[in-house]
Length: 186
Image (tube, rainbow, N blue to C red; front, side):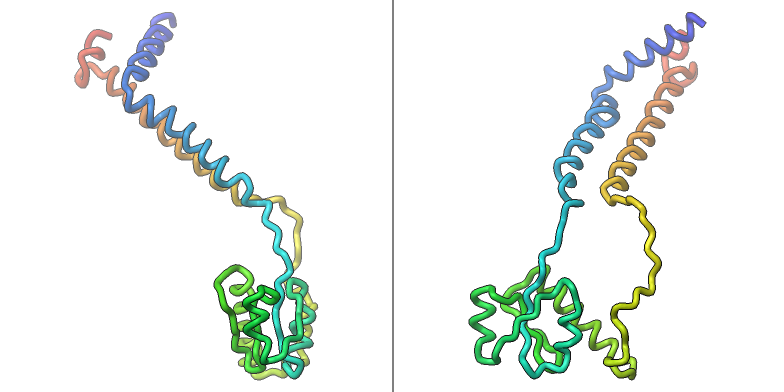
């Protein structure tokens, strides 16, 4: 048993002398975990602010868009669209035919476009849009604390475990008498 511990000690010293193993097996995962933590630590604290969307008074979709919680509907005259967009009073304007008028690209504009596309797709079903109850939740909710950042860190742990296999293979190769002079002496 004493010989086993002595061989483990010598194998460990031999592995740490190899700078490639020391960097890729030990230092690289620590550096990568630090970068992951610094980069992704605030990604789960994202809160959406209400999106200011402009509509005309005669827009037939006004009642639908007023029911959407994330949208803050602002009535805008046709002649004031450009000034409202320039002053950032509204993020986008939805015309009566569901065309979008924007002056910049961003998250709010993308959400407005997605909502307009969803209304167009619902209309393409051939059903009257007034008969659809948008407050019905067709999915059952379950409380599960799942964070996407954990998947990244679990992937890092899997990578380090895979690198541990490389150290084991190197230790076996060094112990084999026909593969290394050190193995012939053991």
